Image (tube, rainbow, N blue to C red; front, top):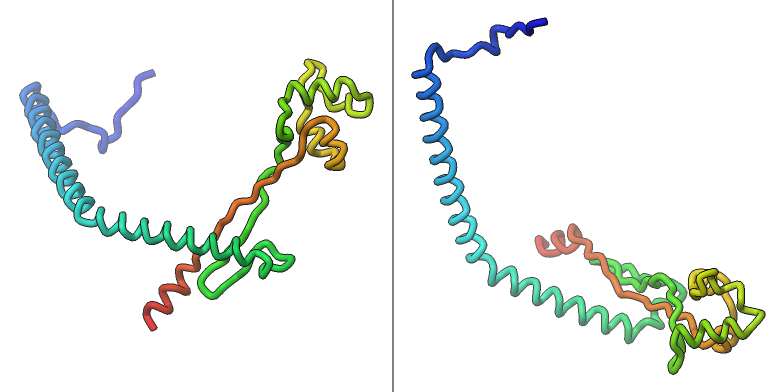
Length: 176
């Protein structure tokens, strides 16, 4: 079954000369487009170069303030009380626990831990069939530190510092 073209899909070209003329127009427009893109990229590079030093300076200042705030918060962590965060006028500072990870005690390797677990009937359930330590099971067990120490490991949980700046508040104070 043949498809029929609607009127808006009909070509305006009547001959191969018209097709050739269309190809010429496409070539010219493609060249024009490439030239415009080149000029645009050159202008964008100039703009980037113009602001790069100021942006780097601002980023450097932000990093200094971030580090300063983190150091202050670490020194005054006891003032957070039971909370892990403290909301201020222009933002929030907080400490968040990372994902718990099982690490070996000093002087122990995972092979040594595995051998200690093998030797103990109490902790055998934490060995996988392929004789790999089931660290996730040990973590989930909430085992006493003294029991973990018997098999040569301890639970280590690091915390990371983070902050959130309230942009609207700082903009409002800059206007006042």
